[in-house]
Length: 318
Image (cartoon, rainbow, N blue to C red; front, side):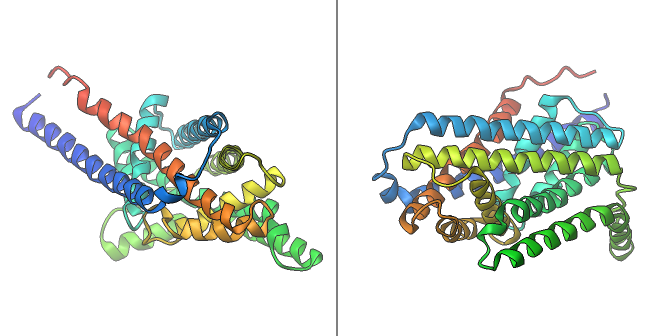
């Protein structure tokens, strides 16, 4: 390896580490702020840590499902990643949601995947596809399980849910056609190569199935968490799935709020009583404590991988 290539390699690693530390600092700052504003409420709780631990295991299992789904999507573009390499990229880039704008998460996943040997088309395309299909899948889950929460007549609720699912299905069908055209137009406007190529239809199907399963698992984990915090879980599991998914989507779509902070909790506080899952006081406690718990679960895997990167022995130069 030439001296120039060696220094380029070191500079790239240093830049990646610096970005990772900045993103991690944003996430830890968000967790500390949430802790300081909710410590009074937390002192009044008597949680059942067995149920909370089970919810954490299920949340982490959901991460594993999403990581494996992403690997399958990459295979649709002809690229391959080992599970632990993919887990590192997915969890570290996931910290980017704590940086206002949400774009850091998508960009970090694409850049890290490309550095791991994935083609530029697969890295960029899979990162963008993952976000879009995740949102569409979330809205489908909300439409299927959450329509009883709408304050409408029964027939109107059913029609609204069916119409919404059809709209989401249409968006998925059009995605392989519309998205590449949008990026070709952006390439012409910006003068940068943003072409993601053709979207493999099998990748879209895999992403849809994986994300729907993930939303269901997230909702089940939220139900376990609610039981651990309040001592019991009220209402059907489908209601917890719908409330969690809709509140998460509300927070995600507020782009300027890091990880949807404040907006996700406001949506959850409004939705839990509407779904007859908690009274207003319990809803506030569940919204705040679930935010703290989920933030810790989102930070921990990425922080561990960043720590391992720092401790990893420098590879021998060729």
